[in-house]
Image (cartoon, rainbow, N blue to C red; front, side, top):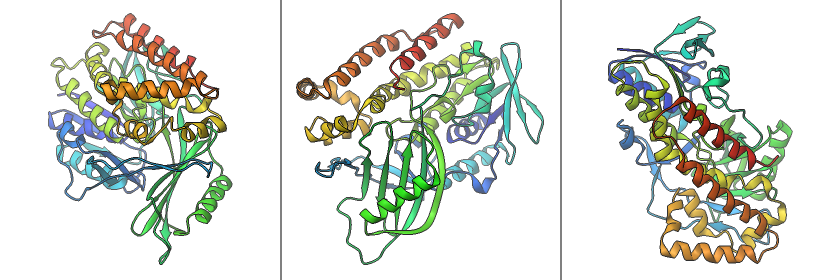
Length: 445
């Protein structure tokens, strides 16, 4: 039996804790928040196969439904695009309910939960992580630290550079969000579409959405810079003016959050250490939700740890976790990140042109949001791609940026193929450096 510390109560960390405690390990989660404050007060969608994959029963009260998205360009002369309805259902779950459900399962499995304890830097012995510092419990020593502290993890950021884990967070890597639920004004006209994403013309800004539910409206503001209170109020005022059914009374939420919208961390592991969830940038960079990625990664990590009969938890052993994650999730997430990386390069005219000339249509948006990029590999999909290429080549505004995307995809395929299946310190660091330098090279500043 090993002593395992989970730093931060992110969904992926809790799932790993549950599985490892069930396997007989002594597991403790340290979390800076109070238990009643855990989880953002918001509804999130995530895939139905999540609980089957991780081997944890779903709660009977979790709702299922469809998010039928409509994209609304800033140019009112361009018609909005609504993704066609499919048979695909998702969980639509309040994040606070989800986190509390996972925490209850963790307690049942024997995980010790320590709240109101902020995690600090990692404790090191040579090249090995041997524990964490905390503000109320002092130094905590362990055989393995699972980093689930979030995008600005103090554990990850304290690791020495030679481990290859850290990566500087740069502009366009994270979105700063505000989300609030407002009353719905009775006796107003039903909106034509219930899940509207409002695209800002300039790709460097961000986007907003307004989701209409039965008794309330869900307003989300996302920016690549941290918005001021006055900016948020002005955007909410505009939403209210343009949507007569949206009230001004905040009935739930009103919280700020920072979420990664970039490629996954290149190096997830070190001796005695593994990152999961937002700490490892495991977010679907278009949707901005990493629940499925994080929970599945937590189960992958637990399986890897359980397979280590010696309990040394070296980077070599934990590399199996990294390999599984990248093969099943990470490389697909990188493809989406490449598409997202186009946004900061795009101008007002280019964004509008995408929709005006039908270069981006409902079918392409469905592929992107349903995470089905492999759909373009069939005969019909290839024909569609060829037609889109022709449209782009004839568009003076867009041909350069889409040519760049094609080059990016080709170069990244080479990097993906070079991923080391077996761990060697020098080979792993070499691959991570190549991976990071590639994404730095294509970054817009």
